[in-house]
Image 1: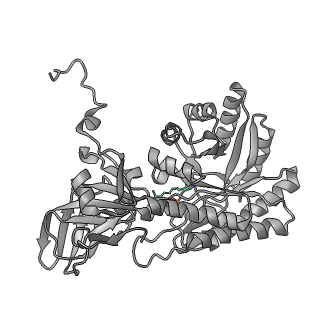
Image 2: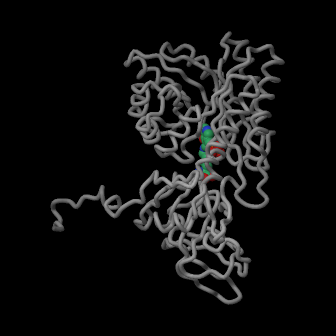
Image 3: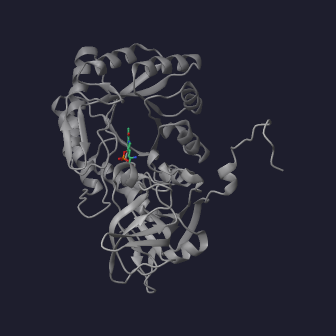
Length: 437
Ligand code: LLP
């Protein structure tokens, strides 16, 4: 997919660059992003919304992969950016991302984070709870600023891949419940706070969703709520945010729909539900993360040791693992992989890919068909663009890999591989201990 192909040497090539060349230049493990594919996904969202005729904002959920070069791409593609911490906000601002296009999320924003975001004059806060409403209003007042807010509501729809459950009330740490009246109380309270400007409501129903049905139901519930709010308070929402969660294909059996199909379902549902209630059509915002970067990322590893347990399993260990991709260990997430240096060879054995961390749970892929693997082979694991670098750790004091963007035969390092100095850079030895010279 994307610009990936097998070249004349029988090697995997991404963005016109031979994977073995990337390995020679940057080492392994290495995250490689197909920049053209990232931009294509951005455009699929933007174009589909444009076709709907509705006003919209597509805000990339930066939690999926937040580095300065990525913020540049999002900016160049004319999108907005959603952040959930001061770290993501800092990254975006340092990358020169326009503050007015930044939305700040999170269920426990600190005073420092709120101050930093107000000082930067970001576009919108997505307020999660009653304490934050008061805190935000107070801080905005101190700074003599009026801040735009969306209130996050929990619509009682939970969607995950093929299932979605309509619960009415949700046991979730996020948002104001629609079912028990908190959402209505929150709107009334927000409207009474003089330093807040209520733009509308936000709802996010889950992640890695394949069906459109969950989004339709969420749109319906949100519209129902908007109508109720108008009836009780006269307030009309100019903005509705339906969150992210659009699924991608990691392995066979995953059947996401094209981006345009999700967008069309959402825009149609908005038109229908608001239109039927004679409600001014709101601007519609979404927050895709995974579907923007997920399938554009590939992680390259070097194969090291193997352990063959006859009749049981063959373990093949690579030079990374749960430190660069914790998703299999955390969520039993599945991935596909191939040998990048022998991409045309037939599969000959079934192996399981282990990481190098000191724990049994550090497995990347179970039961993978590969040609006969040997030391030094390059393993390319696909679809690692979302929540991999973002969730990487220094467990076992392993240095985080570098990140490279490839496009049109060119590669650019966008995050350097961590150094040993990075590893010990924040360590201090108390003065009462013997110092190292
Ligand atoms: N908006 C909100 C409010 C969210 O909570 C999320 C994701 C998104 C947007 C973006 O969702 P996406 O389009 O990426 O599905 N670490 C997990 C995923 C956690 C998602 C959390 N929220 C994983 O690796 O699967």
